Length: 145
Image (cartoon, rainbow, N blue to C red; front, top):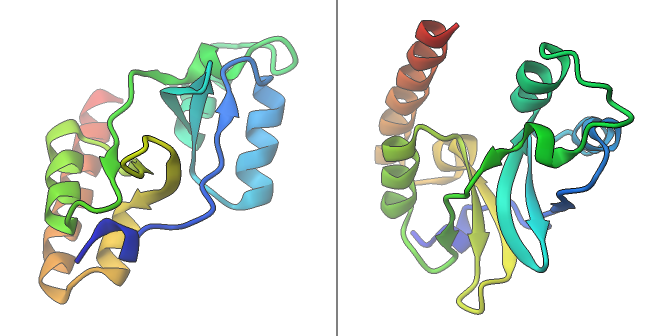
């Protein structure tokens, strides 16, 4: 299957200068776990709800003064919408990530692919592999805590 068949459409992204409070509200109000971060029409990072908590709140950042740039994961791993679910799963596994921004070949963001998308919308054979990725990811987080 192609990623465009599995991804969540309506990808939102935010500017690096977006205040942390607004980032948090967007994550909450849209009921999403991550937001790609852009600057000068280019993706430069990703902010997850975990980033807001662990890099923002835990480090005592002022949510009115801190920005998406202060808590985002620098650099970004992404995929194209015409790649396969196997390509996406390998990228996620190799990089230990749960979300991939999805770009079209004109390098415009068209969606986000999550491990959940792969597990619930992907081929049945992939479901077991996704569960292994989630378990391995949970182990990594437990060891780093």
